[in-house]
Image (cartoon, rainbow, N blue to C red):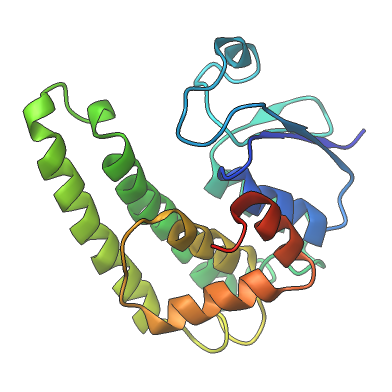
Length: 205
């Protein structure tokens, strides 16, 4: 039995789909007929009670959520595939650092800017939340940019951390001053395996 990935176009499952494809893992893509930024069908809560994508059904039938956790799990399951550095190495420590950093800082900035009502019950605070999210996004991306080690974040080999971080640039509506990260995003968009998946989700972004 393979994996089943529940997602919708333009959502965070892009990087999970890319990881499964890079790993040559057998999987079924179950795409929801809704677009990013709109509520998911209420019926989807039977699959994921939190009502979010991506949701990954593992070969044993158990369910995984949280993009960063899924990426770390897949990289550990397929250590000989081009998903991340070998576990136990210093480079693997850096890999974990930046995936978690992106999840905590970039993902949260995107969510606060797009869905401020999730984070305050006071409508008068929405603009302030969006402003703080924009500042935090720029600060976080600048920190990542300053730590790029080569062509990609960790050196000369692409990992799923690069795809993950590039995804946030595709989502972000404003300009971010991060030339190294922008170069990584271009490498991801042009990658022979990841590029077609990217274009199906994001077009030319």
